Length: 124
Image (tube, rainbow, N blue to C red; front, side, top):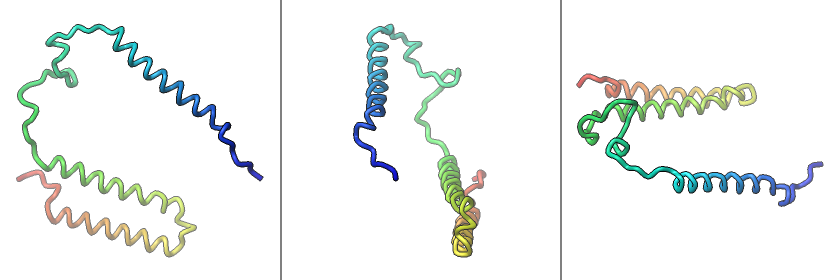
């Protein structure tokens, strides 16, 4: 028979979080207080992968990038939903198989709709 944990049993975890939070706060304050405060044009300039910035960063770019990213996340998440079924497919039986195949059918309908609208076609 398992006993119910008392609040005192959680004291080590609470102390660990307090020590970790204290360390983070102390480190941030110490680095801000002890660190150099020389601001030059080179240090304040934006830096990306060793390539110097050129032009305006606020230029619009094609919506296709966003669309492909959203579609990737959508279909990736839907595939993740199949993992619990794959782990428990024997326990779920015929009902589980019917449900997952209807899920896959719905996924394929969305995929074919996306292809019919030329969502992945890069040429204008």
